[in-house]
Image (cartoon, rainbow, N blue to C red; front, side, top):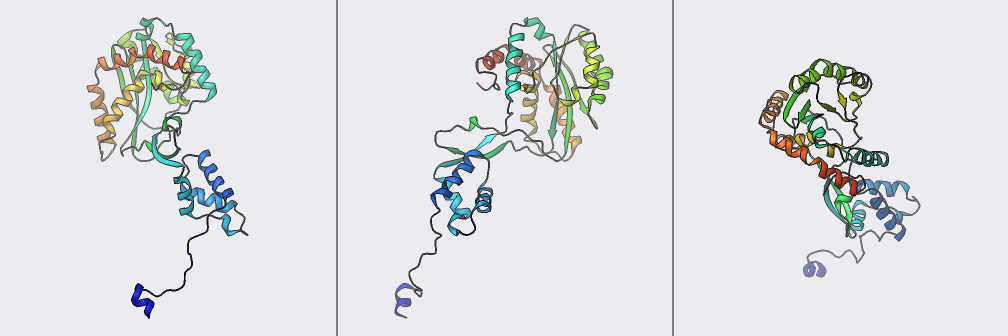
Length: 300
């Protein structure tokens, strides 16, 4: 009772309830797992360590808190944006494309009709993810491939030229090569020729709907089709138009796709030709930068 009156509790003995320190081999394994996958979370690493640990030796197993403490000593947490990872093959194709079109006459670029599809979502899009970095590392050196999210959304097809906002339309239903080729034949190309005649160069990326029957249709067409390197949204001016529109969309809350559609088409009406021209005028500068940086995505 003397101990109770002196310390306010009963002394059950001087023993340490803290889990013993992890073996160096386990600590190094934890660091190795995190270094190989900067997006892996503490719980995932803990489970991986314990699944592979020798069950005969409890010291080799780790708790969540031991893993977190071990990693926090060497790694720092931050957020990085989703980015496109360019394959080695496509990186080389980008360089070849720039070599081919680097001296493209300016008037030809002005005659290009730049096209692309874009999905806008009703809900706000989270574009960042948590990542672990060692001291001295830059988050821009790491990227995560973009992934589509579920939820209500609308898909649009757009086309712009140096002097024209040619068309923005909503895509309904399945958009495969058959549907897209018919869309070009009966909607997009007639609209382009009404505005520009036959004096235009058609551009599209290498998305799946742009192959198959679409390729056949374009080969038999009377207008020129611009060759395009895969994984090159940074070279397409309409991608900059999408970025501008997305900045307006992502801070809005829409009850349904009808409200989303009205807002998107309203943005298209507000889009100024001078803004499109600014994006197109940046192409030569971007090509030079990409070529000097060995084909990576434009990020000056």
